[in-house]
Image 1 (tube, one colour):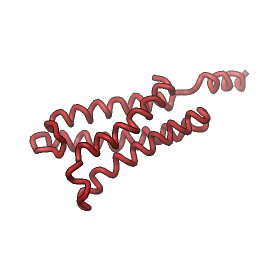
Image 2: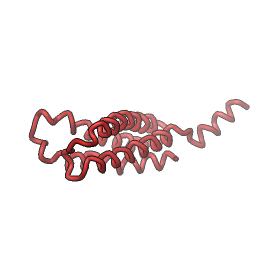
Image 3: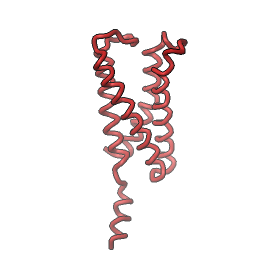
Image 4: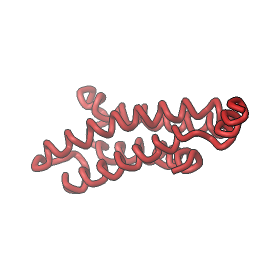
Length: 135
């Protein structure tokens, strides 16, 4: 995985995550009690888009923001995926079966982990600078 993969995926999931959660909980959006259950996906989307934007401006300084966004996404996705597995036999607010929601969340978690690894990999110029400094 590379930083460019991580950045592209941040843009894609930064848009798709809040959009999918809006579709999933469309009938609950007016309920104040449902607010915490969908607001986190908007934070994920905002953080991923900001990290991708910062990385696009300057890859070296923006990379830490992208890695932070992926770290937050991994933590939220981990919790969401395993909570979904625990409620597998219960109805989900989504217009699809609960098992499919679990599969989507599992794939999202796996992609987030790969993107986090990609955002943390050293850049080629950093490796070259480190070799020069050692000489």
